[in-house]
Image 1 (cartoon, one colour):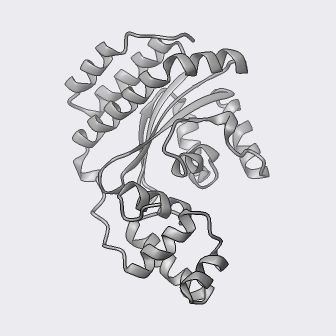
Image 2 (image 1 turned 30 degrees about the vertical axis):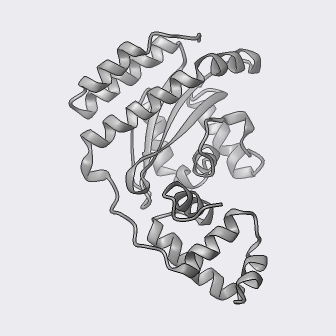
Amino acid sequence: MEGSSAAGGFLERLERAERLEDLQAVSEALRDLYKVDHLIYHWVSASGEQYGCGTYDPAWVQRYVDKGYLRIDPVVQGCYQRFHPVDWKRLDWSSRAARAFQQDAIAHGVGNQGYSIPVRGPNGQFAMFTVSHNSDDESWAAFTEANRRELILVAHYFNKKALELEPGRAPEPAQPLSPREVEGLTLLAVGYSRAQAAETLGISEHTLRVYIESARFKLGAMNTTHAVARALSRGLIVV
C-alpha cells in the first residue's frame, strides 16, 4: 500500500472504456497501482438494485446480496448521509448486526480498513468508490491523506463512465415536491425532531409523517436521511 501520482494514465484508460468489462479491468489495475487489497465501484439504485465492479471475492459479493447486507452495511448508510469521503473507522459499528457484518466481511478478505467516496450523479443516482486493505491505523491514515484528492477524482471519472456505459440505469427524474414536503424536509435537515417540526408547521406528527413518506417516495430514497440528502443535492431544499 502506498501513495501514487500515476493515476492520470488510468483516467485516460477509463475514457477509452467501451464495455463494463473494461471497468473491471481498470479497477484491478488501480488496485495494483495503489497496492491495496481491494478497489470497488458500487452503484445502488433507489429500488435496491445493485451494480458493481472491483476486486472482492465473487463469493463475498454473492453473500452480500443473499444476506441483504445492503440494509445493514454501515458504509452504505454512512455514505448516504455524507457528501465527503468516509473512513470506515469513523462509522457507527456499535450494533450487533453491524459487528456481525464486519466480522463476516473481514473473514471474506475485505480488510479491516476502508475508505469510501460517495458519488451523486444525475436524477439522484448514487454510487460509492471504495479502497480497502488490511493495515494498522497509522499506515492507513498516511495512505488516505496522501491519496485522498486523487481517489476522489478517480471516483467521479469511474461514475461518469459507468453512466455512459449503462444509460438505462439512470433513474427517472423525481416528481416535484409540494410546499409542505419541502418545509418538512427542511426542518428535519436543520436538526429539528419530528415533534418539533410538526409543532413548527402546526400539524400533527402523523400528518408530518405522511408528507415525509410522500417526499421519500418521490425522491426514490431508502429512508428519511437519504431523502434529505437527495433533496439537498438537487437543490430542492436549502439549509
